[in-house]
Length: 452
Ligand code: PMP
Image (cartoon, rainbow, N blue to C red):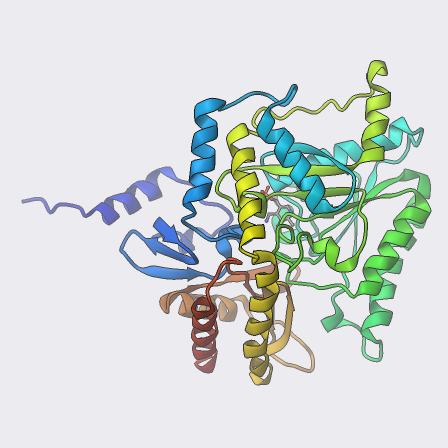
């Protein structure tokens, strides 16, 4: 008699036959972890195993899993108006745009898309068209940083500064240049963190000048490089970058796709540095990833240039069929209310501080070179040798991650294999994590490190 396949065996078989997974080697998705349900910070797989999601999915489930109110907000909106294009308007988009303006704390106009990549693509097009329409016809170049990530599409990937994600797909969109990020852990001996950060900011001005001031449209950066290894700038860096951009008529685009919506301990990551970007892009935590939605927020006076030239075909020639879907907007609005009502933004700082206090003793571990953090994000850089700072082999990183998973904890890794850096472990649990959840992360990770 033929044996009956269990539900999980069948699902795995079909997964292998029909599904192409995102950016993961085949060996790591055979078999894949098939999630079936989730609640709070915990995800259950098809075998009934429970895991603490120490990465909030892909840094995005900020309010945690299983929020009935978010499902209801989307459901109610789908019943009344499931779709209408934003070539005209609808009420959830208006309400969310107003709310985002309040959160940004300044005068911005909002353009909706579906993903972080698309939000950045819109920003690039806005920046180029804006520069043209104020008579700066040659300003088409963008300056970004190595190790930064800005998305998967040809323009956003061109802005990305991680060779491993790019080299098989080149040539990408043209006009993107990169400078070194302020990776203070690897600063030259004898330099203070402040001096080093100022030098890194200076590299941006030097590039603007060498390229020709009149050819540069914008600088794009995350407030803190997250996916590229948790690289936290010093305040002087951000001040100086803003100053350089203003001095040279270059727009400053801040990519808040990960840092936004409380992850940094403030509403937006750039609020920690008290800077005023010209364009802010956001996604992930905007809906806590319950539905796809992203936004590009543009300073009002930049928008006015498009508005004023409208009759002269000076309007923004960009359309996104699904961008700003009414259900996604209604859900996002509710998501922002949850973040506010449950004080989750402040909680990110409290939990982050706790995590780091507990992790700080790991600095004595032979493999731990550096621990960096901001809000509720921690990056632990693993090295073979604390003096030379030679990164550990990727297998060591993968081994630690696998051991954590075997003990019920999902953590992430980041860096750039091609450039020889893939040695930063990352932690970014939901902002709604309980004290017990944080303790579980600490205990599990420490026990894995004690065996490593
Ligand atoms: N910018 C940053 C900083 C990101 O981390 C990401 C995604 N990890 C993106 C942009 C692209 O977002 P998406 O995957 O939604 O296109």
